[in-house]
Image 1 (cartoon, one colour):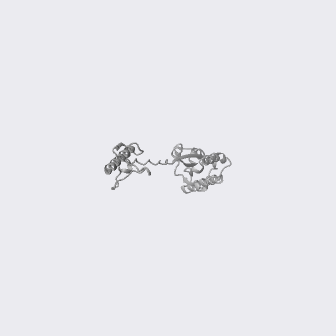
Image 2 (cartoon, rainbow, N blue to C red):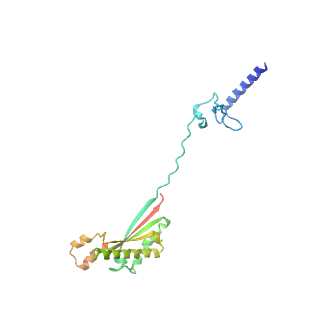
Image 3 (cartoon, rainbow, N blue to C red):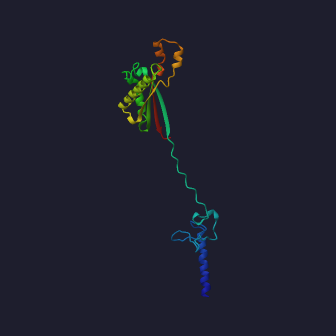
Length: 211
């Protein structure tokens, strides 16, 4: 008689337990009330109740698939900007000279200000000296280098980091007016005037910024 009572009591307790689990935080599973952990059998399997529903399956019990990890935000690629400024050598230098004219300051100061606008995002400045075709290749190369270095020195003296500025002499390798001016059969004086666009200094400013 006592065995029957105990058996009935155990059954009632199990029914009550399963019923409670049907509405627990982990519905469909037997949960240890003290730890909130799913109870497992001797085989390490989660113990399910009669209220188990696959829709409420737990990943820890192998009844659901773990959500894919959130994709890490991809850092925006830096945007590189380049700006090229052409300055007439006639304004900056005397003919066949590499020292700056007094009026060169009015041409160069705005360029310095533009370079400084990049601040720490300044990647580099390239100063290119160019000549016309008059004179020997060797002479023109040396003159273009001297003029480029003169402009570089001006930039550095006015606060542009020296390691950010590169001076390059292009000589007469990138002339634009040679054929046009030669075809006009001009006097030497007028030929020099015609070739003026070839006597120039070009400044390329490169900056970088995040998108």
